Length: 67
Image (cartoon, rainbow, N blue to C red):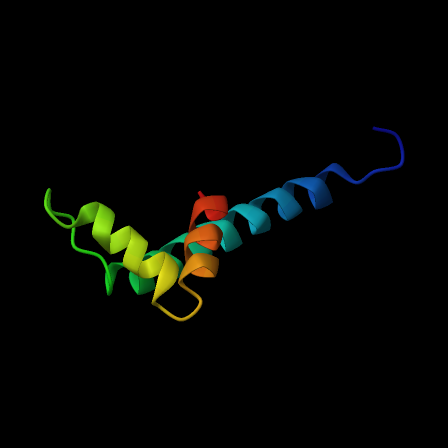
């Protein structure tokens, strides 16, 4: 691309990937506090996070898009 510094584009892509990975780890840690990965309670845990945990739907959305 003429007039565009390719090193800047590479740095920006790497920074974005690092931020997305950090966001995924952080939101995943918060989501893990309210989730039990068992056959009996997995779906109920997701519903609990979506409806009863403060900002739970936002955390799940951020975790999804960070992936």
